[in-house]
Length: 574
Image (tube, rainbow, N blue to C red):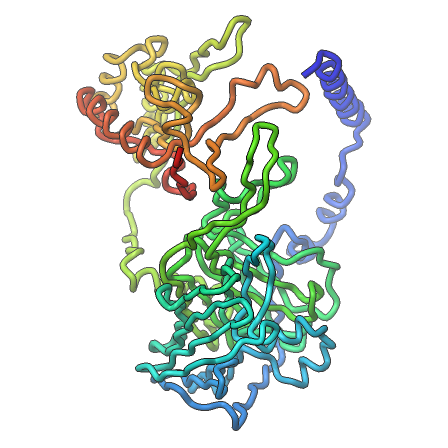
């Protein structure tokens, strides 16, 4: 970066800082007036809690939702203690009836409602279809279609215990696949067996959305909302008059896969991570609802939710199972190349379960309880017994970190091992007893340093012997010590890591990396290139580290990123 550009950047920052100081001195604080008005209102005023910073209160006394009738052309395919499953003769649509309440859920809105929506030909076909697909053609272009728009046919409907199996043929693109639909107690299960997917034509499947319009609502004709797991969760309420939406919500379950999905704009706020593979619908609060749980195929799945006004007047949501990803294949160092897609599709069955709710459980709280119960039944969540002891406290301490110096980098000491013990002692003297301690930057080079080449223990902090003494002393006080470790990211080449050999490969066979830099000062931060270790390299480093930790008497690690960053590994074929 030139000196001129760097100078402009610094001047810009100084101007912004000066402007902020002047506004503060003059008392111009944005938002002060609204806060004063709120404070002046009566106590317990609800106005403050109706803004978007809070979940809007449920509308009390919402009108009773009228149940649809099951048309005569729908055939009863299965029945459980609580549900009935109906399907059309060609399995283009299904209905699920709650036997206790009489409420009927349909995968296709009724024809009168569809006619009022005045849909174009494409969306008119989509909303009446049992699935939506995306596929790649011979030119590697990604296209969209549905059962009707692609002229599909139902080849076979086969009865199953508690349901049926339907084989669909998309002859225009040479693809066939099967959907299994069945009842299990109070839930509907829809499965896409991987072995039943056959691709003999020019088309290659990219994604499938089964029964995407199950529970769809036009505008606010039915009171309620869609639940999406955006961060801590969000609700899209059904409204007659609503803001102009630019696009639908679509989030990748467990976050984006950076080897095939790139962040287009580094200056925008990242989407909230989807940490649970769930979504849901409510038709009348405290009346009818369901929560959808992606059981199989969730590691390559997205959740789509469309508000009214985006393409149609309908609110609808569904899982989207990704079979192939598009990507850019570079052919030169100047980034020339072409767009293409995965030749081998992602393998594995895909399955979504719909748990139906009614009465007091038919709201977002009921969805949370239903999912918690599901996890307990699956053995993935154990009820936690109430503790009579002190509230646990995790203390993270930073030992050292590197910073740019006049010549290369230098390590800045922040907390020595002796100081770490004094911090714990101070907390204990204040009556805080249930403590667990995490020590970051214990290694030579600090937190980032030259990871994964983390040894030896930093001498600036006291060295190996004082770290071992810290561990022993804290153990006597009932405080476990965890040493922070990262087996996902690597910082530059070193004895334990070679980016070309040990780095993660993208679908385009490039070594995946990320660079943290200031746009006006890339030179000073050019050393902050972060690589990602492939699983084989990470496993070897961890195995080698485990022996060295054992020799030091260290038996607890705080491993970052491995448990919450998900990505694919495309092995280099060079």
